Image (cartoon, rainbow, N blue to C red; front, side, top):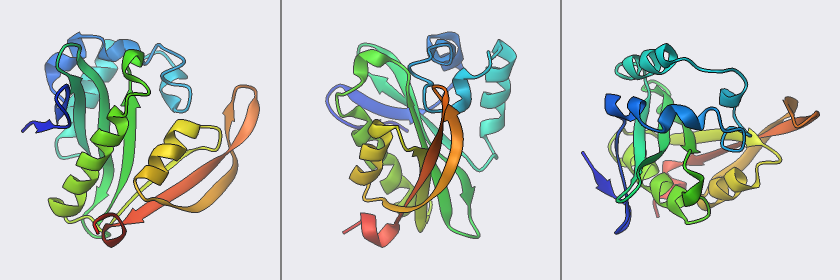
Length: 176
C-alpha cells in the first residue's frame, strides 16, 4: 500500500529495511527530537528492531513518509488505537530536516487522518505537544483539532517547565 501525497512525496508502511538507513540517526539529532522524549537517551540497534517487531498487533499504525529522491524522511502514526473507544493518538516525526517547512507534514497528516476515520472507523484522533512547539500546534490547528486541555508544567524542556497542550478532532469535524 502506497499513498501518493504529491508528485514528490508519499507514505507507505514502515519496513525493516528502513532500520538500516538514516532512520536511527534521527533520534540522535536534538533538533529533530526537541519536543519528544526520543532524544533523551541513546537507542541501540536492538531498540529499533524491537520497536519494528512490535508494530504488528500493537494497536499502532506506523507509516514511513518518503520523498521520491531522498527516500524515508519521517514517520507518521496513529497509536494507542482503541477499537472500543474508537480513538487513536496522532504522532509524527520528520527526521530529515531538509524537508521541514515544505508542507509535507500537512499532506501526510491529512492522509493518515482520512485513513483512520474512513478505514479504521475511528471517531476521535488526539495528540498532545509542548506549549512551545509552534510547528505541532500549527499542524494540530490544520487538522481541525480543538484545544481540549493542558497538563501544566508537565515537561522539562530547555531548562524550564512547559505545559503540554492536548488537542483532539472528531470524525464529523474533520470530514465535511
